[in-house]
Image 1 (tube, helix red, strand yellow):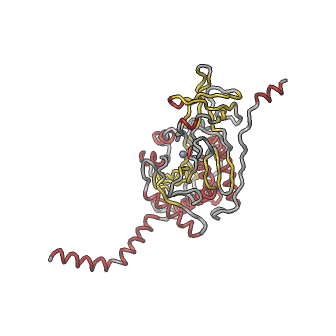
Image 2: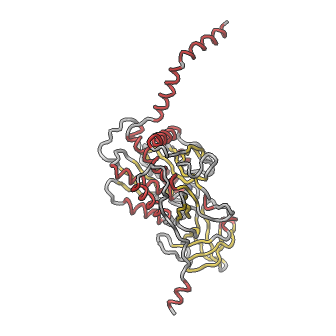
Image 3: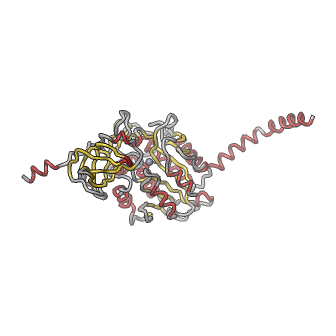
Length: 411
Ligand SMILES: [Zn+2]
């Protein structure tokens, strides 16, 4: 009888996942690095998350770095998390840019539901994040308590009231106030080179940071590099602004904001990671954008199959806008994303999609940038020298034609 009741109450399991490395790749990570990147990405996209319920990915990062040699972990009053690779040995870096801390930043949340309670005999969950209300109707949702892996209940969104208050139907299991809900989709499925996942934005940004931190630790990287993991980005950079107001960042920090951002005609899936020069709201720090582009060119010169893109990703705005507005220099890089915020081609809710090789390329690009910083590379200086050389090449032509034009002016 007890068994029968348990079976009757058992939740249907979530759709199955499949993680496997595609055979075809750009050759920017070695086989061990690719395997590790896949394991890290899998761990992140499998961590259920929503704005104000980032407990699982937060604990994932903390579990990797708390108490680990070579790393410092800082948690601010808003539970934003900063992991600092302190750098091995005395830094020989002399230039100003090399002395600054390079930080990669990503957010740990993704649009999702928070259960408000029961009203008029119906369960109500508020949706947080940018998804049109009409798409939510009919969406299947899986609920958990923050910090708990096992699902408590599943339900379907029946209607969306003002304030993104969703009435739920077909509730199976036990809902409770304080639970959070995620779309009931597979954690991740790799098919060909494409990765479809319930959450790419921005757990793959967070996963890319961890991949880079692991590479820096492995090579005993000399420079200081930080990973910043923020909360509640989807509700208006709320965690990030809290971090900036609390002055939680190390002083003299340059940020590269990482995102999965809606694909554009100029930034497509499978064409490599994107050096993101701006978003819907603002353009980013020119010298950091220049450094990212220089790192991409240097990587491409060694790995001919590596591709990269440079684009204004104006399908959404990102934390780099907030960093720059609060006086922290920020550039950005991202993955071109399909089905942004789970909005699929059929007008409903489906998995987000990226190209796996773009992810490997992003990891390699960020690692290259960290190395360039540690080597005192000066991307702006190099570009200025190149332009100066062109000026010197044509200086005679400029002078002779100037004489003619100015003579005529006097005559
Ligand atoms: Zn995002």
